[in-house]
Amino acid sequence: KQGGAGGKWADAAIVLKAVGEHVAPIPLAEAVLANWLLAKAGIGVPDGVTTLLDGDFKLVEGRISGTAPRVPWGRNANHGVAIIEGAVVLVPLDGAAIKPAINVAREPRDAVTLKNVSVTAKRAELPEDAMRLYGALIRACQMAGALNYLSMQSVRYANERTQFGRPIGKFQAIQQQLAVLSTQAAAAGLAAAHACAQLDRRGLDAGFEIAIAKIRADDASSIATAIAHQVHGAIGFTYEHGLHFATRRLWSWRAEFGAGAEWAERLGRETIARGADALWPHVTAR
Image (cartoon, rainbow, N blue to C red):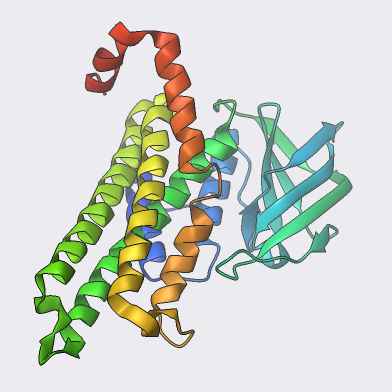
């Protein structure tokens, strides 16, 4: 109905994981979420690149003013999508003031300032923290893909690199570390896929699963990146080797749309509010 392929979040999970696995330097994840938000509000999806505007904005009589400090691919985008007081807002960026910046992975994270820009805004049924929540989901999917790349690349390198007359992958200590890396990647992938499936199933009530996916991806990134660089040794730190394209993205993405510790604190507070007796029924019911 909106001109897309009619896919669900379970389908998007596969695509976003592939984007992360191939560390593709494109704003596809942002476009998927931005266009989904527009569709939820019944706003037509514009041509060109669309990104996410997560910042401090005011919407007055159809005009927006304010600043978003770290906009993904802001310099490359034709439009941005913001959520202001329950309304999804489509913002043209041709007149925006853009201050270029980058993250650790050297991806664009630009400051975008808007002054009295005319926009299209419509209310939609979304959670109060929709931008942060669904932003965490797309990052968890990308991180799952990047973690899978780390696992495959590290196993490949361990079987190619020889020391003491045999591949280092034949040493039990290396094998054990590779096993840990692979289990971390698998756990993050399952958590992200489950969160997407639950968003299709539960709609607005999928916040628990999304928080778990971001926490799991964050934890896995810390463990997996350390192991991958240890296995690769010095070559993994060179710009010419492809390992850093995944590890630096993982270090950047885990802080975006809420770090794992922030989501863990949120789940903790919600658990306390429900009471101890409600914890197990709440988890098993999902």
